[in-house]
Image 1 (tube, rainbow, N blue to C red):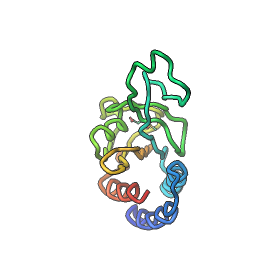
Image 2: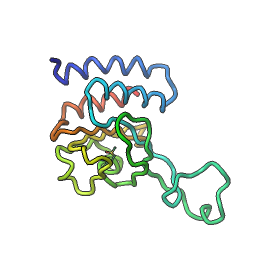
Image 3: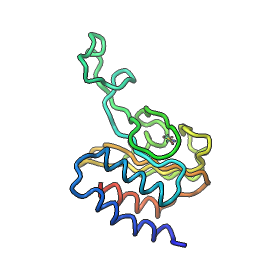
Image 4: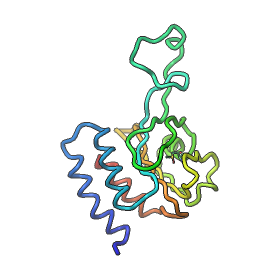
Length: 169
Ligand code: SME
């Protein structure tokens, strides 16, 4: 059986080929989440994108109301392409594992989600998790979130390869 290093080494050129010349971020996220999910059999694999929000609601392109126009738009993580069970849609800055990776601009590895204060349980089956921020220049524009049904699935090997993977996108 392949080690996870071998699996990642095999996956990276596929991700490069899938993303090369493709401008559409959503399409790339959709294919990359499918690829990772199938190869590793994770419980949940997907992306959250940093999007503008007003008062906790997604900013609609329609004309703003008098009150919404007064409030400055803020950002939140909004659910993007994923594979696995249904997930929560909005995650605030600094909230949960995803919001922490966004705020701290670093990969967060959680060996046991019950030990992570503020973990957002989209599924009670999830036991361990890794979240990797995606950058555009200096700015975090999205996070890759992967959940496992086993404890301690992720370590620095996953962090190393998944950081390379999101860079290729
Ligand atoms: N557990 C995440 C929320 C997203 S789901 O796992 C898909 C968190 O704490 O940010």
